[in-house]
Image 1 (tube, helix red, strand yellow):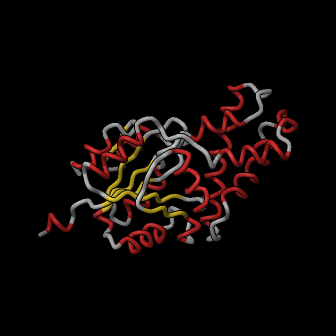
Image 2: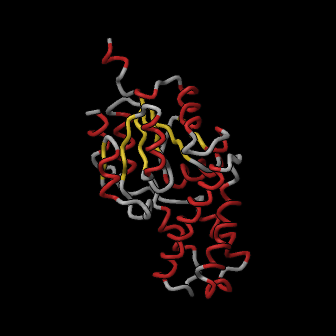
Length: 239
């Protein structure tokens, strides 16, 4: 009876970064006049500052903001403060194209197979549980070709991760207990919150994300630490 109650029934996935190669899309969207190496560094700093901005909004208990608005504001700040020599390269039209690029991203190569195996071979439900807007998630599902049972955005839930209520609300909506769900993410802050409420946790290391975290410490924090999703289905089957 006890083993039935703790059997894994679903997987919550963080989306961007964890499942999708956002870096390639964004770097390709910068003007070709910006050297690719600098475009890469600019993109990484843009992403990093976006997370810092979200964390500040979370701490101030502010309602989720449209991700396009947040990204636009953060891009302006990054260009002004760290890449002022490229400010003239990013006019309003280019800026619009860069924001739009976040809505079209390819999946990391191993992700479609992993998610399909989790659904078909393991018979589990799979959900997106990520900050952002529902429109963003719909666009990313289309561009990546990935398929989920449901998309939970911070906009839809009315809460930013890592607010514990964001996880609890999603669990309530799908009528699952924390111990029945595995949270998969490339962000330690995300998994720390999921772990706190009793979810199983799998960290996916992506070179594009969590660049301020100490990986040797992160490796020990969660139930599983993986380099990519190739072994994710087997890992989940063993939890």
